[in-house]
Image 1 (cartoon, rainbow, N blue to C red):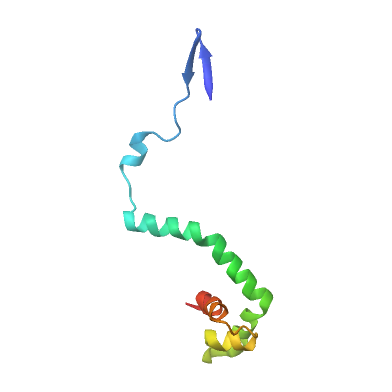
Image 2 (image 1 turned 45 degrees about the horizontal axis):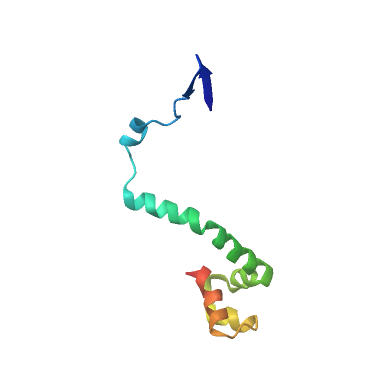
Length: 93
């Protein structure tokens, strides 16, 4: 936001100054990991939502401690193409 004083326009001081960012308590690799988590969150959400709608999550739960493979999930849902098998396996990894 700008203020007008004595016919001059002054900018407000920034909320975060350069000094705020000098002392960083997070490693670069951790910051990159966190940025990737944020970037991929919408895709992960949609994948899990689709698994819920297709009944895949229920099949995983019904499999119990023995588990179920991605291939079995794809076959049980009639998803037999390579892409579908990949899509069924990806969230499990």
